[in-house]
Image 1 (cartoon, rainbow, N blue to C red):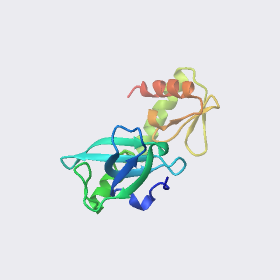
Image 2: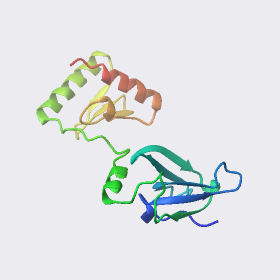
Image 3: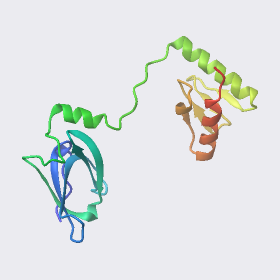
Image 4: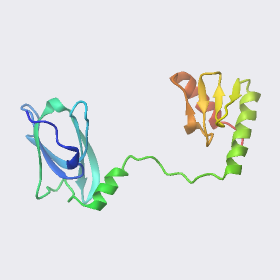
Length: 166
C-alpha cells in the first residue's frame, strides 16, 4: 500500500486504484483534499466541465493513486482557474463590512433586547457581549457571531438573537 498523495496534487486529475472488493477498480476525479491524519481522499468529479459530485475515499479503501496526464471525462484539466474555483467551493461567505455606526446601533438593540428578556449580559472591553458568563456574542452581533461550548445554550442564544427587533 502506497502512501497518500501529496498536497501538491490538489486540483490535479487523479486516478485512485481501489482495494479488492470495490464495485469499480478505480475512481477518477480532481483531488480536492487529503486528510493529513487518516490519509482519506476527497475527489471532485466533473460533468460537462462543471463540478457534479464529491467522492470521499477512506484510506483503507484504496491501494494507490496516480496523476493523470490525459484527464478522463470525470476530470477537469488542471489550471489556475480550476485551483481558484476549488479553493472557493466551500469557503467562507464574503460579507460587506457593516458601517461602524450601524454596528453600534445593532449592538445597542441587541443589548436592550437581551436585557428585556432577562438575559444576564456583561459588556466586555473588546466590545463583545458575555452572556450568563458562558457564551459570547462578537461583532457584527448576528446569530452567526455567537459562540459557546455548550451546543444547547448556543442554539437558544442564536434563536434569541435572530428575533431581535429591527
